[in-house]
Amino acid sequence: MTIKEYVAYRKSELTSLIKELNPLPKLVIIQVNEDEASMAYIRGKIKDLQTIGASFEHVKLPLDISEEELLKVIDKYNNDDTVDGILVQMPLPKGISEEKVKEKVIPVKDVDGFHPMSKYIPCTPKGIIDYLENEKIAFSGKNAVVIGRSNIVGKPMAKLLLNKNCNVTVLHSKTTKEDLEFYLAHADIIVVAVGKKYFLENQKFKEDAVIVDVGINRVDGVLYGDCAPDRKVRLQTPVPGGVGLLTRLSMLENLLLCYKERRGK
Ligand code: NAP
Image (cartoon, rainbow, N blue to C red; front, side, top):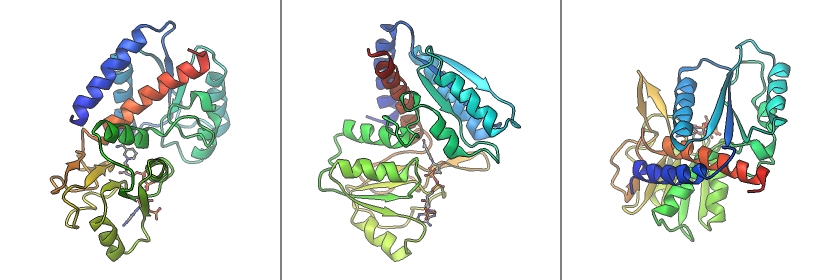
């Protein structure tokens, strides 16, 4: 199944589930930037919420809001029983700590899975594992290489793959070119989350390898992945129309989990 087909199928399941719920699950999206990419992400999230029939509130705050005021707004929604999930769109203006904001959202409403005590898996790694499972990709004993070690993608991705009994290698900016090539040539599953257009291109891959391309690189208004398209492998996720859609789907699924957890349904 392509990612588009998979996401459409999962969304139709979510729509049916949500139809049965009263009250509807409600997400609050807090925006404190006018970043072009963030606006596009928020539009996408709102469209998804409308598609599955969930309820939402889009809160736009002034760009010069102080950290203290922003934390107060988050607290208001933390204490609002009608709200099931809270999402603060990153990046935040300079002077506001992303860590403090992530830790302010209470874990039971943390749809992003960013809180250190969150019960929920960060959306991008969750979406990737769920899709690979649906594609019946084998994990146990396989060599997985994760390139990038950010807190929102690389690290949680490596942990999930390890939990699936993969042999996991995490590579980063200090990895030598020779080691990168060595590990890639032996990899069954490659997750690349570096943020550099076509970072992977001419390296050797196993013919039955799976390449999951997390990168979103906007160059002159066009989106490119971290891997050049059409590598000779078993499966390569496209950009656009790949991991971004899986991430959006996971957020909806996490919202439903928040709803069930808090309301005991
Ligand atoms: P990030 O926080 O900037 O982390 C990038 C990682 O890449 C770092 O760990 C860095 O290593 C590593 N890196 C940089 N240069 C490298 C090199 N030459 N060789 C090996 N590793 C290198 O990025 P992120 O938030 O994880 O995002 C990565 C990409 O995924 C971006 O394009 C972002 O837009 C995209 N993204 C997409 C989605 C989606 O839904 N599709 C979601 C999240 C992110 P060091 O730790 O050593 O600096």
